[in-house]
Length: 359
Image (tube, rainbow, N blue to C red; front, side, top):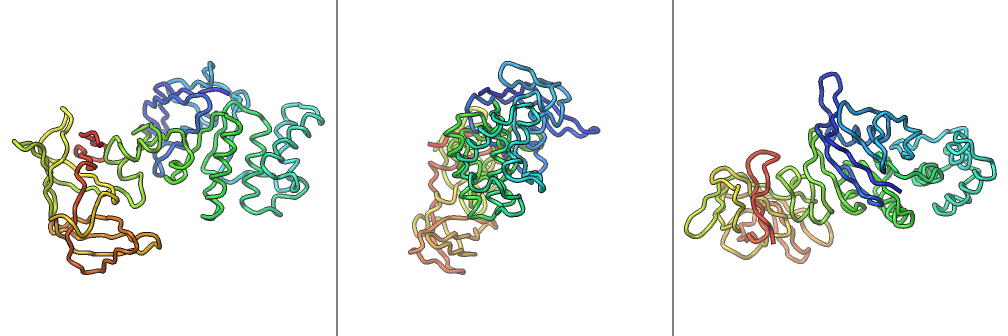
């Protein structure tokens, strides 16, 4: 088992910078997700860690070794790909055994390691089948088993659940969490799916345009997003973001935006009066109370709750949640309230920093 350290790592492709000065320390035994939209640099980061790409500058460490110039086979890592990459002509057992055969292990050693991994992943009864005879979830477990038999210091997983349906993804998320708990090995997981990152990770590294935006445990990322981009990327429905102005008077800080004005908690010393963004989670919008007014634009019934979208007087929109028992209808004019103690104030721009500490 080993930790992973990226120190000022940069990667360029023909003048395009995919990763910009990445500093990231992953502790031994952590499950860390690299999360972000397409093109943010997360897969390039994983490929550099795997040895499939080499950094333009900076250092990558696995344990106490700088691995910049090492081939993938010398890094003591195992990678699980999105496509599973199983050999169609080989049985499950032979697919799992193959990397051990390449390393020169005896047949007895290979069989013992495959049997142990197969039992752990509930594949014992499938060892004589070919990949085409397996379901998507079973193929995914075989790919995990092939990585598992190598007993690496670090597991690398590149969107391994993206080809599965929603129900199977949920099942495999639980399987991966359980596997990580049993092995205690370092796992680095690339995904664009925030639900995967939030439910599986010790910490989440959120990236945008090749730069690290925040690296923190899931609940910290949700409750205290570092900037406007992180706030918008984490959460379903996503955080409401309203552009407006902040000012500081005798009564303290005030936000004024489309169709609303409300006091906000004390801001940091770096906050500046003028253009700003109000961020509020849907669960902190309360309907049928308060003195703010809006019209119901949309109601989405999800079963246990309703997602309600409001049209604000000043032209903005606000999304909230209500219990399914609280019936609202399109076109209703209603009062609502924002819990200002839970409001976030961000500076201008996508990466404008959060200017207040939310309780």
